Amino acid sequence: MRTDPEEHAFAELARRAGARDLFVLHRVAPDRFVNLDGFGRGRGWAGNLSVDLATEPWLTRVLDLGLFRARYGFACRIFGPYWATEAAGVSAGEHLVVFGGGEVASREDLDLVVAAREAAELAGRVPVARRLADELEVSQAALEIATLTAEGQEEAARALADRAAAALSCEFGAVLLEEPLRLFTADRGWRPVASDEEVMGALLPLRQAARNGLLVEQDISASAYPFRPLAFEDGLVARVVAPLGDGGRLGLLMVAHATGAPRGFTSLCQRVILRIAEVAVPLLDRAA
Image 1 (cartoon, rainbow, N blue to C red):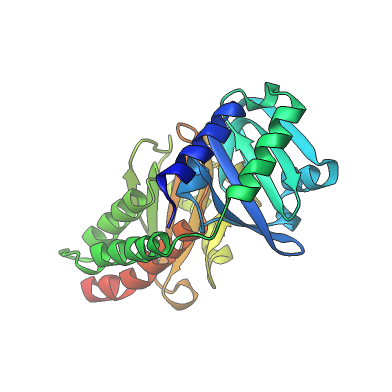
Image 2: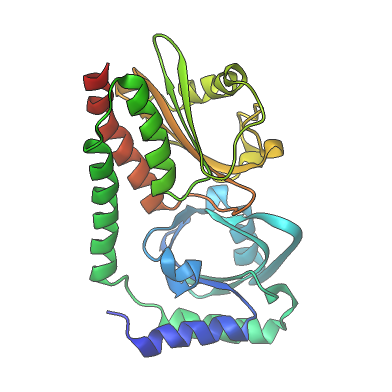
């Protein structure tokens, strides 16, 4: 299990790099990396972040060049679910080390390379306690839905949208029920400037895309479904959509992050929302 000196060491490496977040990504297949450890979000997402190079152009540049920087005037997706205004990545053997936030893009190359090598040497396996805590988070989120008491399907759907958004610290949640079409939303910091009919119109294409499993969009600005009022231009940055029932027979559940706190969805986030959707089906059936 990680000791206090190890935690301090990652914090010190992030400080030296001028970063708020530090990720140590380890190669587990030719084109796939997982996050082992780090600082900030890198520590919080240890063991719950897996990326495929086929969908990660920024990380591919890091591999190709050995060291690559990014600096934007506003938060953008760097890789996976991670958003920041600036970042620097270093290829260190079988690891990719990413420093994000702060003033990392202005640090000297040598400082970043040395810090990255030290981080790669320090990273170890994800502690068993962390994995158990993750499983507990999935179970607790499911239990909150399973124990909901609602008078009717509409009340159940409204509570589902709110609880799902809260479970993933999202700013917006929505449930679209079918036969007939009905919309239920949860505003936790963001709401669409539109009518329910317009929101349903933007959700319908997502319903088809998520009929057989999760639809995860880590960066809505590159979405194949850029329909307003649920588009990047409206203030959303990432979303995940889960079907409710086999083939989405009951409808869909969507939660989304907004520009106020830009980030995407880790592997743990995706497991949580999928489990919530599974548990919600008998709840909605009973309330019908």
